[in-house]
Amino acid sequence: MQLLTFNPATNLVDLIEYHGRIRPRAEALVIEGNRQSWGDFSANVNRIANRLLAMGVGKGDKVAVLARGSADYFNTFFGILTAGACAVPLSGMATAETIALMVNDCDAKVLLISEDMRGLIDPVNDELTKLIDGGRIGFDFADDTWQGFAGWVGDAREEFPNIEILPEDDFNIIYSSGTTGVPKGILHSHGMRQSYWEGRDAAGYSAFTRCLLSTPIYSNTTLFAMLPAVAWGGTVILMPKSDAGIYLELVNTERPTHTIQVPVQYRRLFAHPDFEGTDFSSFVWKYSTSAPLQARDKEVLITKWGGAFTEIYGMTEGGVGCVLQAHEYPDKLHTVGLPMDPENFRIVDEGMNEVPQGEIGELIGHSPYMMTGYYNQPEKTSESRWTDDTGKTWQRSGDMGRMDEDGFVTLLDRIKDMIISGGFNVYAADLELVLSKHPDIHDCGVIGIPSDEWGETPLGLVVLNDGATASADDIKEWANAQLGKGQRLSNVELRDNLPRSTIGKLLKRELREPYWAGREQKV
Image (cartoon, rainbow, N blue to C red):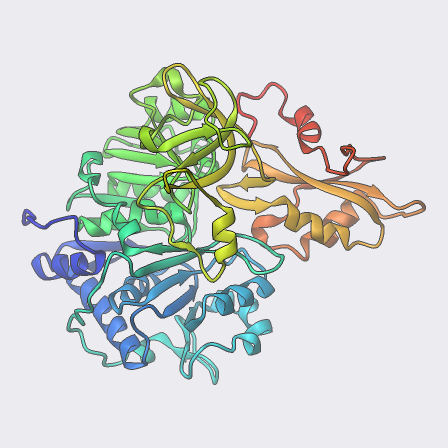
């Protein structure tokens, strides 16, 4: 394998062209037993980019994708960027109505989907009014409305289009979850994403990297590990769907060096009968993010799994972040580690004053690599930030925590009632709005309770109207039929009343306390 002399402080589009030209026979992608060389990957990316450009899609335009993971999806994501356009990967866990809101909100000109997602698109297809003629493309199907992907790409040129990419140019939009109103589209720039691979050689990223991914492409978690693997010219081993048995088999056969997973995935691996017999010696580095990982799970990762282990606390919006190098600090496994940039990290009270060490406050941070903003929602962007007296802008996390005497941060609770289930954000307000529409419900609230499988799971607490006869199971089934797959209630409990403050605010801390009693983490 040829040694590389490239500058990693280069935009991703130029790096893909470089690796495809310099190392065309090296392996770029492995998916379901199929292998794609860097030469083929680069050529496919260029063909997709040139086809988009021929359609009039280019600099700054938005291209949305709603699909199962595949080689075509992988190529398309980077083809969108190579055309100078902005990629908008969408979650299949949302409802059809939410999908329509997101596609329209981001001003997508083109939408690519896989056939298994048609149930989410067909009911709202007529509402997608911003898609251009020819802008409906099916990866693995075609009909009168959707043109097939292979036919769409056709004989597009393989030459590198050489679109100028600037740091401030739009890279991607990732949507927050939600069933009410317009979800927030988190817009990232090329400059922000470049921070993902600059300096990652310190974590062992190189042309020899083999990065195993079982989280979906629409997840910011996936991009954290995938983008540096591509930028450094390594190999991405992509799983279309998370499966513990297949993951462990790939560890043995593909010998990955890097991986990233959310806590629920790690716990499924630990419980699998093949875990103890799997050879993890090929690993250089592994990551966990999206939700706090329990200390006992971190212990397994640093004792029974090869390579270094890092837990990352952060936001898709950027700005606020902590890193725990668990292999270096085994006595700090109950924390989320040290601030990524101590000079630009604070814990503040309600007046935005920094609290003394050891006291509880909100975590905020500043970074040149924060999101550009919430797309088309400047007011929401402003609400999520705070500007100090010097003019410096800080990103607010909405998370509460404290810092110990060694500078390590412990998460305690959230200001907002967000539930992280299986690594994905679930907003209690969205679920409560659905419950409130049930004719038998007088009062309701949704809290996150502990789950061995998901880390945290939504529980509905309901007060019925006088004389109502609906059961808890009836309400659960009714509500879940209206919620996305990643939002559904794990259970519903009937209550005589719910505790509220004198101004009518639901006292969720009081509701959560019995479920989290004795737990090392309260979030």
